[in-house]
Image (cartoon, rainbow, N blue to C red):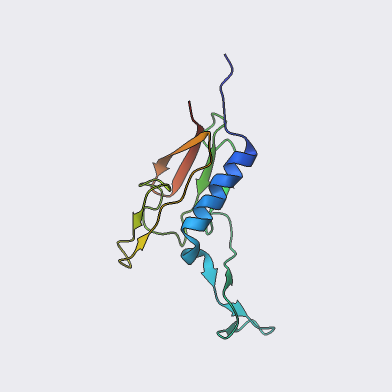
Length: 121
């Protein structure tokens, strides 16, 4: 029997859902040509090293499953409640609405900062 895993395309949809739900944590001020913050410019998506922004990792658990890993700069325990449910941020005290998962997948937290993506049965 062949083990089923989620396709890369579906895993990327889950990553996009995480980025959509937690977009506030991924925004930053633009910088001018001298590297200084430009507070008058529109916000831009924060860039960073893997782990500082939600990062898609293939075969994260050694079983062929994809995972979204986001530890640095992430909301506290972001993966615990599931991305499809509302999230209450205990640090800043505000609520974030859940987002819809792509059809054919479900997700489970492995750590508070790792969300493993599995196929739905």
